[in-house]
Image 1 (cartoon, rainbow, N blue to C red):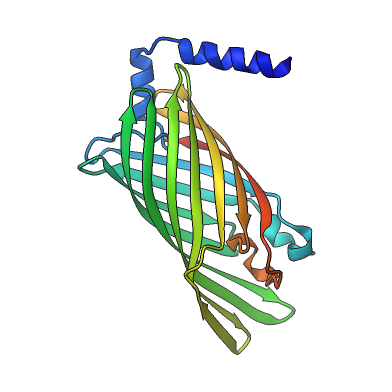
Image 2 (cartoon, one colour):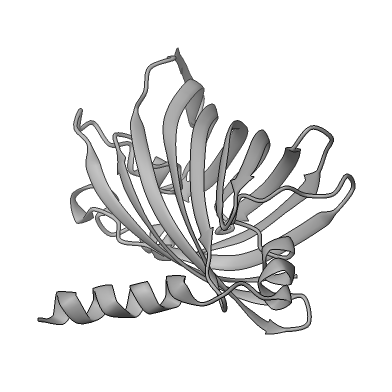
Length: 236
């Protein structure tokens, strides 16, 4: 009967009447798809840890380091908003920029768009200077709902690599691709702490052949991996 209890709790949360606090909450969330004023800016910082497949990372402990992430979004005309982001665990850096369109249906919001990202990493492995970089496209769609005291957003995206280059010592290789190499689904809960500052808790499921933070594993497996991520952060 645990499921019935959860359903009742969710129904009670949805049944709460909207207040002015709800409207303010929607203006200061990051993941929730809402209309933004032109020039309005929201920042978020956080940490992401992932459960990486042991048969790929083996004994390279550097892959286990959490990713420090910073993202920003700003409102544009016509219900558009632009995003930018930086993720790093020191040996790997990931820069992204994107454009999305959003629309609201009462407490429900939806957005669609795409991010373009460039990433690179370097590592000294057994005396060899190892480097790798690549470009990726992330088409995405997000659906979110505003509850009286928090918001829940579900984001799904595709992972499409454009180009990857690898250098091990003096050996350089490069490959191009425009195929879908993976997809992900993430859920994010945002709740106010004080003033315009919000706590973020998220869980993301990745199903992908290539996960850029474990690039130096040089996986030769032609199969999809399941890589779960846990995210904690703050909106500023």
